[in-house]
Amino acid sequence: MNRGRRRADIFLSDADRCDFLQVLRETAEGWRFEVAAFCLMSNHYHLLVHTPAGNLARCMRHVNGVYTQRFNRRHNVDGQLFRGRYKAVLVSEDSHLLEVLRYIHRNPLRAGIVENLADYSWSSHQGYHSGSAEWKWLHTEVLFGMLAAKDRNRHAAYLDFVYRDDSAEIESFYAKKNLPSVLGNDSFKEMVREKFAHLRLHGEIPEARDLAPDGDAIIDAVCRNFGVSREQLMASRRGKENLAKDMAIYLIRRHTGETLTEVGQHFGIDNYSTVSSAVERVKRREEADKRVNKALEKVMRGLNKGQKRT
Image (cartoon, rainbow, N blue to C red; front, side):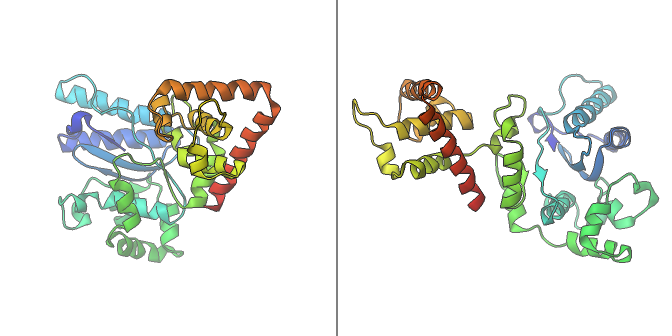
């Protein structure tokens, strides 16, 4: 999904919408970019796509870039049209996929633009509803197959489904100010977290931080490993080492990408240099002391097991 810069309209006319759909179809046909659903609103759009070639970023640069060029040329303007990089959500191929399909198609209803989805021309609802040959480029088979086993029942099943209200889970998900990057059940999220954990601090993939464990989970894992309570871990005495606390600080800093100040907030530490000193102490010991290295690895293994049980 993406929206206009400063929430400005990105479609000023039906000709603009036709341009966007032409670019979208060209991308789908030329780049193995399988479009399952779309909805064009005045200042934003939603797409539901499958990218078997793993080329989402490349395709989205093409869609946004070429459409911006055509928009600027048509309206004799220049500069940036969209607010920035698109927002992507990875969706589990289960009932959540159908929920997203319905959410996308019901956008005009929620916005009060129409009372009947059949009256809105700028979404793929028409393709699911009509079954006309002009919609053959749209990838509907997977979603139709989830709605009904037999072809003759699919359109009726779709209409019955799409005219029901969105689920509370989907409404809550899309109501969040900072939209999560993964939508699915707990086992799906855990699978994604494990498979792509190596990308969690990748600077060019900001959503990857969602794959990292949070600070509270790390603190709980350290407490389990050392056999101490949170209160004991948080305690500090001048001149007395608290390895458990230092290790928790170090792991949060290392695995979440939080700033020193943000890490300190977990422990009631106002001075970021205190956090930095704890990080450096553990880093030195990790390099020199095999026991500390093994302890760190054990904490992370325990954390992963704890997350799987959740």
